[in-house]
Image (cartoon, rainbow, N blue to C red; front, side, top):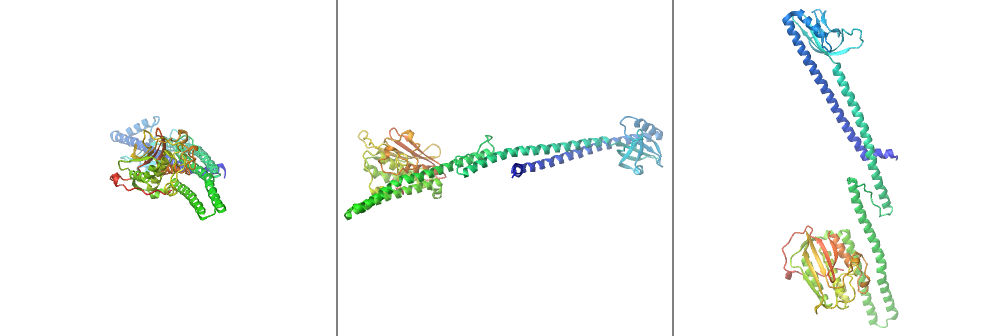
Length: 516
């Protein structure tokens, strides 16, 4: 298709032609009405002038007879720009006047008539003039004709019609030229967007639609599409990272699992050794299953599928339930777990995912703020959520154990309070080493673990899941300095939750252990 053909087929050019046609028709109608109204007003003025002159001449005839009427017609007819006069006898013979010839039959009927005529002072002219005349029958059989030339009216009409034609022609030309200009400008921007989308479809996800800076509808569309493209690029980048991380991070436990089974088959001598190998195999398999469950839960949160299960629930009840669930584990680690949720905190969201996210944060705090390097047993780990190092789900604290402060056990504080605006803040604070500020941006990425957390068990998915849950609800996950230690804040909007009566802390039911 040629460039001109593309131009004619654009919606902008078609709309320009439609608006131009409507405007030209409106302008033509307006000019026609103006010309007709002007013609009508001039005709009314001629009628009024002729009526006034006939009235005056009739009065002179009544007062002075035919002789006075003749003198008056001769006097008026000789003036420049005078009206048309003709006085005839009953037989049609001319008595006086300034009309040389007249259309036959005009004097036979009284009233108004538009006719052609020639003046006496221009007898040789071949051009006929048009006039609006009135014929009056006088007493004695005389006929009086008085009229006005219509040349002035016709000239004014021609001027208006000519101006209207030129005006419409100029409007059409300028409209088409403006349509070409606007269409070319819009088509240029659309072609630029098309080229960008073709590059994106070819695999270059870094392409962005150009923005002219005029903040018009195309700029707003480009802004929204660019935001969508950034989100798609981030998701594709995340998918690639997940694929790469799965290939690398899960290859090690699978290899270890295979080697252990192979070693047992090669070296085991009795049933107890086979049983021990099977237990280790089950333990490794549980860890792999927990990792895949966490990945599925993150994908479910990031894709928005979890919005179908959203209900109204009490975040304070979630905090108390998670606290009761992890309090024995904290005591075993030599930590004090305290929950501060004095009031009800109703919100609208996915209860299961919020519980899982808060449980991961508490699990991280217990794991990395413990004063002794003790870890949960196989059964305990199967009942607790997946956590994974300081950059992938765990707080990422140093493995050096903090000593008790003033003879007291290190404390972990879980809070559920109303924040600024319409937010619910779920906070987990500990007194461990914390995460350096430079590493906090990476702390929510999948499978990423800081070097200081490599000695701790985990897959690096805990904080990733908490961050995905926060974004699903339109909130955010913040990692802050607790001076000392780490404070993780899960800031979630209340959403469309309906406030419900506060439930006493003592009567709250603990939540069940969230699925890993």
